[in-house]
Length: 187
Ligand code: S3P
Image (tube, rainbow, N blue to C red; front, side, top):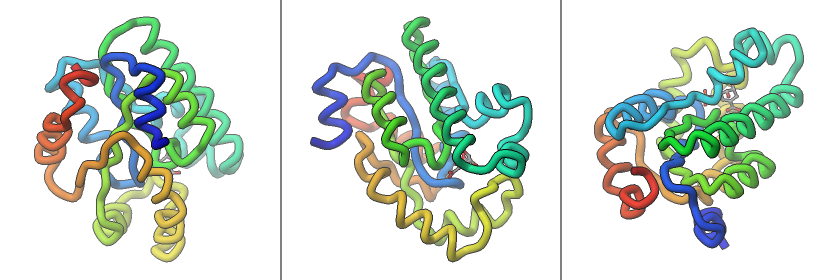
């Protein structure tokens, strides 16, 4: 059973759409615009992690390393999903690049009834975009980025939907809005 089928079998909660995908795939930009277009609340998981940590993600990685980051990411996701369930408001959540690659996070998302959209962007374009970013601790060099991408692909592939995200944000949003289930789940 794919992630989507499992999620569906449990009965999805109306209005919780999460954007997954590699660093540079456009989760935050697309999520923010999509939320304003659909009248949903927007939550950026990385931003919430930084608030919880009281420092930037880069600084957190430098001080504590990746395993404590993954723990904080998991706790913060649980909090965000809990708040969303409590408020009952429609929400678009931009996940971090590694969030959906962690089994314990997929489990949380499944339990929350979230619909997960993978913003799929070719690796060459991701490398181009990441090259200009200074706040990504996991971007060391091109080879390690390619390896991380390969390692994460199988996780992204089990999202509920895949949307090509190499173009302009408005094109990506149009594709998400065209998804057959978005009418039922996303509004
Ligand atoms: C990470 C991606 C980042 C952020 C952290 C770890 C990853 O999010 O969560 O630096 O593991 O790929 P973005 O994908 O929003 O850059």
